[in-house]
Image 1 (cartoon, rainbow, N blue to C red):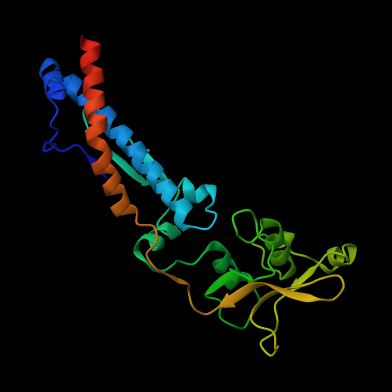
Image 2: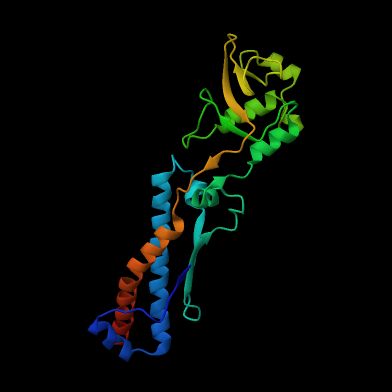
Length: 241
């Protein structure tokens, strides 16, 4: 949260002279400009920080924060999570550390998959097809979920007829509890070779603190607000002149 405080010490005679020529209303307008410009700097810093500490962050991740701007009658600007982010967004875990919450895919598999074991979390295996962000590709995920009868919409699950029509398409399966194969989803190519695309685990992944949003945002706020305030006050004074 960014808040304009009364105790801002700036040793600048030109600024002090500008303040004496402005009305309280104009000072508040200029202050709101400065706060909003500082909020933009903080947002840019957070996005740059994400690109630094995360491996190929998605557009959704980079746009997780937004600005609630200051106004002359409310000299407070906020850089905060978008309402669409929700309480379960992984950025909270990356800020404070700890175990992440269950994803939609994990909940879907746990609820729909005919599997005797425990599915707490899932992670792409080394042979999974990944997208540009390093996540399991949507196309392969949907093919796998259809093949193992775990789609939310049951009509999109693979049937015997559709399997016969697409004999060259790779198949996917989940090994039985007695199998020597490790728990997860495996892919069977048309030539019969198999490879693993998704791991099932009984423990939720635990993360250390990585993002550093609060400390970094405070540093940017303290460094940039005085300069922005000086500039916007002088801009408003020049308008009056």
